[in-house]
Length: 486
Ligand code: NAP
Image (cartoon, rainbow, N blue to C red; front, side):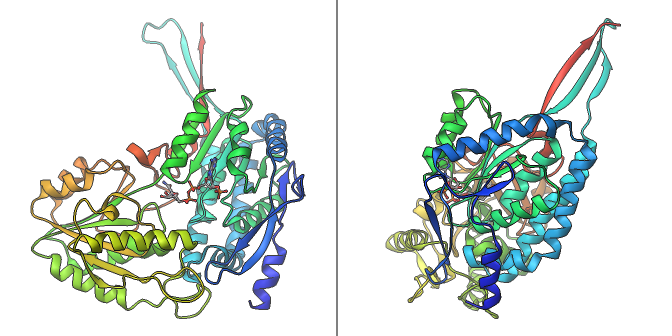
């Protein structure tokens, strides 16, 4: 590893951040953080115990009162200053992320821009929280509504976007005046630890943001979720874990937001601009090595253009270079771990065993690291596992359809409802299909839809709640109604 990379990792705090102090886990244990391109250990971070988790919540609860009273402008300025500092240190954040998560530096730079933008957006929203004054219909009373911060919030984030999945929650929580305990994924904690230190430098008061890394995840998180002092849980991760956390939070009827898994359909109609559709497919499929909840998981292409589309996509996919994300000229990094790579390989084998054709790719790359080749598979059956499950890797399965209604039915034929993509030049079709798709987000003629100014979130088994946009801050606010007799 280059000396600069080594010193960058050394500069990141490795402890738990509790009440403004970095400290070791109470039993002194640590978690190893791995470089997925080689399997080498990058660093060790503290491994919190149940008592450490409780101490983090104690700190958040203690800080809540004063934090809620802090002027909105002051809260906004902390976010604004954090936005500027992240932007100044963009290269360091991008390098850290690439080292612990695997994606290329170009992609990590993109995430730094995207992730920082949530802080800028919510720095502007902090000063626009307001209520309403009205007269009751019968004229007897005045109705006042005011917004208050929900209170101490537990944030659990995944490994695939180590920065942005954090800033998307931390930004609106700071803007709204909530304190928090953040639990980053065990595989990618370094980016979050660096972010927490940066927020301290920007003047975030002690106890407002506490960070707990732990390998005893369920044991440490469950008591917090069941603690009546906690007022909100926001989770981004898999649908299975999300279901479990909703069950745990039901006991105290905790306010919950769930950003869960996806199974995005990518529809290409016969009137689409095919080159634009292929450009969109490359982004929707290959952003983040396919390890994104918004990743195009199933390509449904009209039967009259399916051959041409598949050939063009396969040509682009086969030209991609696999390798370590920090290396020049590399387009696709490794998957997060061996389990993820083997899972992708199993899905491909299953489709192959059902008679699908692998046009390009179709195997793991030999050697160290968890690489899987960019893959295009055609003639995939509708009941293939990869059409029903999240692939979370660089594999594009393609099937054809013949009518608009069939495309809509195929797209909606899943328990998930996060992102979807439609390529067509027919305005009427844009309206009909957008109205019919059971998804939280729809990209028309574009392969990336995430935007800090837009409400991100899903329906059905993809969860509930929205992050970003005007809606994002509402997740961290309660409405109190006061009736006033004149
Ligand atoms: P995951 O296994 O569900 O883990 C997500 C987070 O939950 C991690 O911090 C993990 O901690 C924690 N966790 C695991 N078991 C837990 C438990 N019993 N109690 C409390 N927390 C627990 O998901 P992942 O594999 O990291 O992430 C990929 C998934 O996230 C995919 O399904 C993807 O679609 C989804 N995702 C959704 C969105 C969205 O906005 N909808 C965005 C990104 C990703 P450990 O790391 O310590 O296990």
